[in-house]
Length: 319
Ligand code: RIB
Image (cartoon, rainbow, N blue to C red; front, side, top):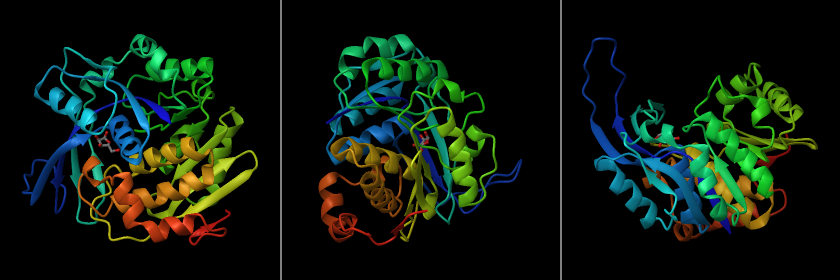
């Protein structure tokens, strides 16, 4: 089971705040933590911790952060053959988490903006051995589009997580994706439609299906996720937990979904497992630091996982 992630890496600088400062104001935050992040790297780490073989195609800067980022990939068992170094700063992400566990994120792409279609082409031989290619939007769109074309040429399914939301993303250029996995904001931007309730979500997802995308999986935060496809839709409810930090929960969902989809080919099953994995991650602080290993996940959540395998599993219903 091998997965290629063509995407970003960032250094997450997370401040736990009581409130955001007003313009011109300085406020003190009670806590701070620094860790490895970036949507591409997060998804890669989640897949790898669950047991997938992961090849990461990315660029780090030539600064003090780079060595730590590469070591982190290696410590997580990720193949770093295609982790390239650039004469630029590494990607960084100042993040603010409020007392309700919600986050606000600024990203500075740095070296990530230098990952080119040629870099991906150079990794062709290793990508060709994979069962899934995963993409997000913290790299240049040109690289995203050419990677989808490469996946189509090689006959490898491609998953696109259109995050962060980008008004420049062209729907016709991602029509070759097997999966597009937006949140509600990203879906609204992509479809040009309001997304205020489940009816809106289904209508907006249909816009994506109409251009040829086969599966749209909309993540709904604490409300769960819905899979929309030609045959209809399937809703997986959220799971109530005591959340302390939601940073990277979407990446946990996508990484876990990808791992179990590659393992079983069953979209609904992979979504239910992803719901458990992501909801578990928000009970811990940090981004990658909140992702369980496969052994821990399958041990600690054994009874929830057993329910996933039952017909008519709890918390799941057709939309
Ligand atoms: O999705 C969460 C991630 O978004 C963080 O790790 C941060 O680096 C930004 O990329």
